[in-house]
Length: 404
Image (cartoon, rainbow, N blue to C red; front, side, top):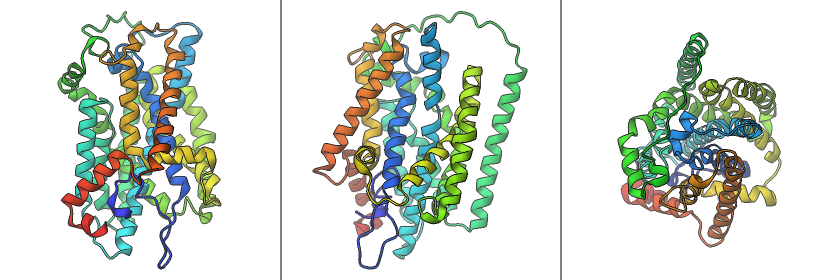
């Protein structure tokens, strides 16, 4: 399969430096990291899916548990909040860098046909948003990828300026948010009224589609607000790949990322999140992406001298090779279990029971995804969504027909 024939989330954008007249070898760390990011993002999204009031109930913290269950929920949510989203965003930038390198070595123009890829990814995200999950990230990644694809064609100096500039804009926005939160008077929050009517618990599948369309402005606000962060993380991922983060020469870089991400940012993120829940924007979009860099460096260090994923890593790698399919399917399965149009289990779970129920849903869906990816890839080269994406791209792009 050609590197240029798959989106950065798919299996194609994952090859090491090809040797003359030899098939490119896969970098096991990339597939493993994609799999970890996929199931890790589920660790955040599953709390939305298991809440009886869905995304709205999650955002407004309706019907919280009490006692020890309250703190268990807070800790578990904070451990996953934003870390794997940041990791996934960086991985997307790495995928773009690999595709650009492949195009250059093949004598093809860059970004060439990438706008077609971005357009198809945006369409995937739009369908996912309408029919599966209102917290879709693919639409935002498509727009960001289209911009960064052109930035990668500029000079090192220009890319560095864009990275620093985008990061500075994002940090300024976070700083302003922190000042507003710190100056805001602390008052007792009035009791929130039940969410009624509740399309998540009582509505049909089509009712939820209509609900997402009616509230698209709210549900699509996050990708707009974090657009500078996404630009910065895409460019950072591309730089990390070129700097050798997956190679032996990147040992010093990996150590620094692990110290910064796991030694500094991780405990700070947990402390801030448990201290004040209203600091979630600062942790999710501030400290959490740095933790994601630490996770990336840790996995890269583990696989730097290994050519195979190993039995456990192989299960994550298989999910990573089918990242698009698993991202959509894991949310669809969890929705079927929890929402009213499916089994409607979330509406029958008490607030205190929701914590073990959510853990159970995450473990069950993760096991289904690993089993599905393993069985599918024993017979097919690509996941079902990846196959459809690949053939759609070939039909639209002359480059895709040539690369195939």
